[in-house]
Length: 211
Image 1 (tube, rainbow, N blue to C red):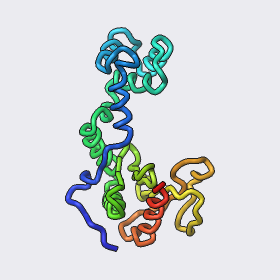
Image 2: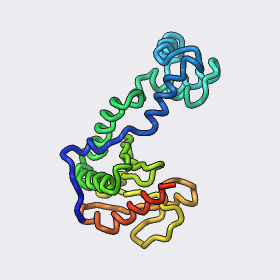
Image 3: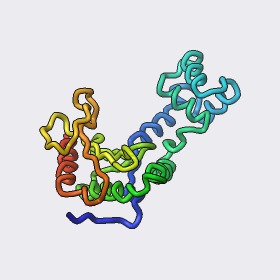
Image 4: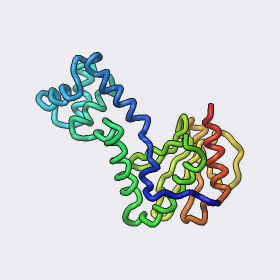
């Protein structure tokens, strides 16, 4: 199996759909609440309680802010969540998250993760790789696969396969019964384990997300 490599794994990353959702939320804040994001942050700092949790409750109870908006405002008021405010900030943070995921005792798993990302991109340029703090999801229309460093010696390649019949190598996560996107996983500890069967099932998960 031939996989095209890149000089920089971070060049494979795409902006998470959550970033566009947050950008729209920021743009809509003045019309919906009467204050911009920066005006809210100043108001919270000057008038709100001390902790993030208290600020969430205060925003909901005292100012009628919805649950999601209260969560985001409280996060930003204590310096969190800024990586979602712009595509550039997200991509910078995404590279940091991946570096941190595969540091220390898990550093030897980084080539496995990089190869899986390159493999996904070799399937189609429609594949978007959008790292988070603890997992690396692969999107087409939805999440169809993900990489997760499960232990110090193993990465789990999670796949969204529904109730598809699969060979023994693919482990049922219980996701189908729980209506989770990821329903199966393939444990991988070395590059030699990324074979044609892994590519085939990654392709099937991608194809299932076409509709």
